[in-house]
Length: 296
Image 1: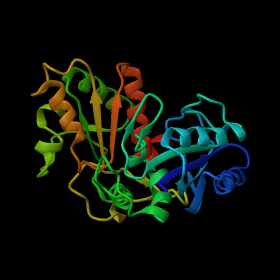
Image 2: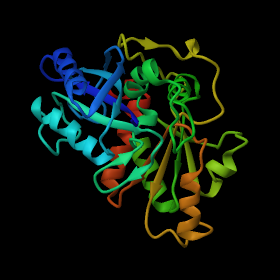
Image 3: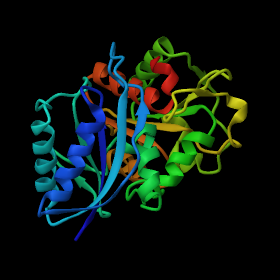
């Protein structure tokens, strides 16, 4: 049977009991086999303005007889049974079950995207997932779960914003500078920059040297000088799609699509939103997920 990696979260009610009940439902169902699950981790809300309800997060590895969309419906049914209202996003919730990986399949439909589009940079996802499935590979990015988690702990506090249209990129970067304590900087010397972050399409930003990172398990903060040596890649890449593409990228749509598909970029958010407000919200939430103290 296909192996699937799931993320579990709750920040309302008896969180531990709810998460335990969700695991029981996965174990009891004839269509799924619960192989193993992580410990519960604490994390701050991400992308949820005004919420102070701490999450418990975990990960589970299951085998299933269900096809991806049927598995999604089953997970949503478990959520609803525990008080989750359909269509709720970016709000406090009793239970959240996300399908992160379905074997090595890549799925992109109106209702389901696999790998999960935000899993590669969310510490509260990667920390528990590394416990139980650190050697699983992200089929789009080409990195293992453990490598993605380690990269967030080791890389410099840099982010790269890549877009085929300079005005949209400039608008998003201006929003990040205005809302967060980030600065536009010159590109770093990275051997793969031309392939992954072309200069004419990329703006680089850096958090100040005083930046700190939140520890998921304890909520304490680790000083920058206590981290491992910096990696050569940015801690986060944001790929911003804006139409039309043709006048701004060599090769037009095909050239941009080829750039997006390049492996080796590391933690990445691919935003496909025509609404600048939505793009800004998604980018800000990604920064909070990578640098938890920004949401405090």
